[in-house]
Image (cartoon, rainbow, N blue to C red):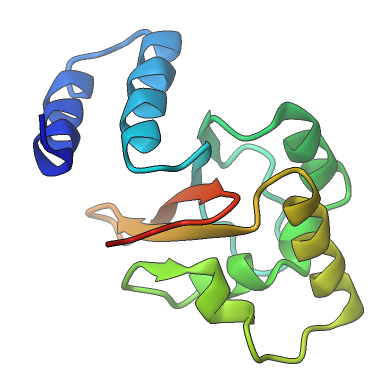
Length: 145
């Protein structure tokens, strides 16, 4: 089965799903086929707001997610900042490479990298009311070809 068909099958299969664990497993299978190890489906909080309560489905490393939330890293994360006005998918590397990052932003990226989340792909999503969400997928390295 090709990757596009796999993604389309996931969308069809999840549309009638009500079991969160089953949804997580289906999404985990799809992102794995694309070479990603971690994923997070979350709303995008407005600047200054915590990410608590916005997370819909988490396939992130649990320890990392707990730290990210408890330290309120969403306030300094360069990827989260880019999501404030992103309309097209982007990679983490295109946001951070060649850019001067604050020490706090560098800390977030270094901590993520230390557990194998060195690069990722963010796919911004919008609902009919204009609310922002994102599917963020990460791995040690990514190959979008």
